[in-house]
Image (tube, rainbow, N blue to C red; front, side, top):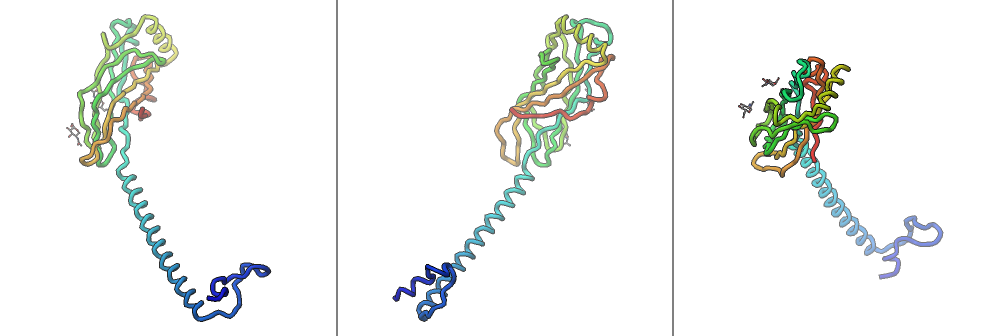
Length: 224
Ligand SMILES: *[C@@H]1O[C@H](CO)[C@@H](O)[C@H](O)[C@H]1NC(C)=O
Ligand SMILES: *[C@@H]1O[C@H](CO)[C@@H](O)[C@H](O)[C@H]1NC(C)=O
């Protein structure tokens, strides 16, 4: 081999431009072979990238269609009739009715535990464990309804006076929190446990019943 064969590019002035020189047949054969291998490796590379892209798209679509929606909670009813009837905290009761909806098309939800708690200005004023562990089918709604009173409602006289003062101003605002430990069921696969909190603000009017502004509103849900 002459040095020319291996140095297609000349350094110095005109740097980088292809050389116009006399080359041997051997040189051109070498160039053709080289460009063939480059083309083949480029093709393989392109096919590989395309497959990778395809796999990415399929994964993305699967993820979109299987991604579980969190259950949706709404408060349908919430009342403390004693507020309007001038009763005291001893006889007070809270009547509640909320719904939990599984909006997923194909994903079921296991509720392993569920706890309802009522807060007033971030003070826990009562609560109870709810329902037995149950399984909620896709597109199904479960009613969570009941009463708090006696042991499950702890309102001091001082708090009751605050309720009455709020009532005189138009509304008493509570927060209903439903905490559950859930698992998603996707086909035959069960997800791990997630602790889920639904936080529903509920305002009751002077009559002791939930105000229209709070009824049937979707409660924010977060996981912890
Ligand atoms: C609770 O509310 C739902 C939805 O409005 C209703 O279908 C259900 O009958 C109510 N349950 C009770 C016990 O009030
Ligand atoms: C929802 O679940 C309840 C209780 O398991 C069941 O009776 C009802 O048929 C279900 N509804 C639908 C639409 O699957």
